Amino acid sequence: MYADFAGAYAGGPFLGLTHVIATLTADPYPWVQFRIGRANRVADPSADQHLAGKTLDAINLDDWDELWLFGLGGGQGALSKVEIDAVRAWMDRGGGVLVTGDHDDLGAGIGRQIPRAGQMRRWGQPSASGPDRHSTLRSGANTSFDFDDQSDDVPQEIRLREYPLISWWHPVRRRPHPLFCGPDGPIRVLPDHMHEGEAVVPAQMPANDWPSVGPVQPTPEVVAWGRIVQPGLDGTGTEFGVVGAYDGHGAGVGRISADSTWHHWFDINVVGLGTAGRQGFTTSAGAGFLRAIEAYFLNTAIWLAPPAKQMCMRNRAVSGALWSDRLVMLDPKLPVWAIGEAALDALGRTAPRCTIRDWIWPFLPIEIRELTPLDPVEFARFVPLIEESAAGAAFRPLVEQTRDNLTPPRTEREVREMDERVDAAFASAWDEGLGSAIELARGQMKRTQALRKTLQKAR
Image (cartoon, rainbow, N blue to C red):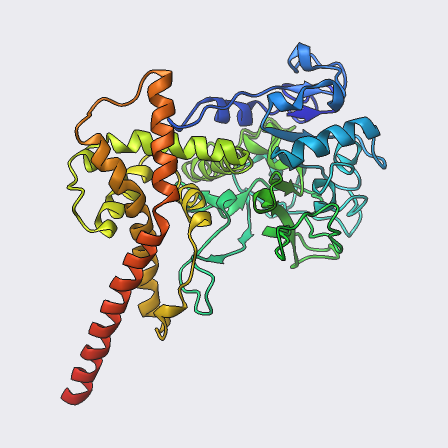
């Protein structure tokens, strides 16, 4: 984490980032641990002292997988060319970035010049107090819109971008971006605030900034929108981008998340305690909202990790799942979809389902049009079949290898050998998994068509 004002991590004008840090360092998942460095451009007693008063080129970025920016300073940018070049090279090696700010140009000092990431936020507008401001305040306990409403347990509702599970002209099963998959379903809330910034898609994306692989150029997108509900503002009733995302892994560079405001992260908004001393998120409803917001923090840390760490997390999760009771008792001769069903269930007990899908689906060569013609209701049944078959094809050799060895890997050598087996299993599984799913789907289609003909004759 990198800031440019004193008191960024504890105390300070926004009460710090203590809840975010506590959420990450609680290690809620057995397949990942987060190590957080609290760095600051200025002297700051709340920062790690060996990281305080440091410019970005004075920090060895290769010691870190991600850079989270919480800047208060404005202007056209405070970073030197040496800093910008160092960050660009690190991002091009896979480093992930969270860029934040707030109204006007707050945060621009350390955020605007960050390659790619700086183009995913709007700087200089909207204002803090004018009628153009982006207020997401919900009125809370009374009908007025007060400063302290940002600290209560009534968050803002957000609209999520939805994705078909398979890119096909009949998208029937949909999911949010992995940043917004929560333990209780899609994350549809964020803390509210009286003057947010905006996450945007750049108007132009030149190839020197936004690399391509062959003809494909991954591009950023807005993945969540907030709505202005406070009366009397220019934008009352309209939406604006609150979170943007760029998946650079397809182009060999790091991922980026852009947030409209760092108020989604600071304690004053996350756990309350505004100027009137009102403690937020103390009701049962508030606890549920807080759980969802904490999941957003965790998802950000997971999703921004470089590809090598993504595979490491996957391998740790798979290795842990292999010795669960659901899998050690499986017969490897079962159909791959049956093995996959049990494997996904075992993984889902320790990992968010969207994270699991994010580990699996990018490697799947999707050629689904052979499944047509299907109406949307019928097609929906085949999506989990494809996912289960692909996972089952990867897990089957792993289940076979572990049936005779009920002791999980413990030594460094055993862990390395397990990683190699998992990598090999996933690398060779897709053709078998997809072929099995298509074969089963075709059989189901024939049975469905035969049943239709029988019913038509009966009528």
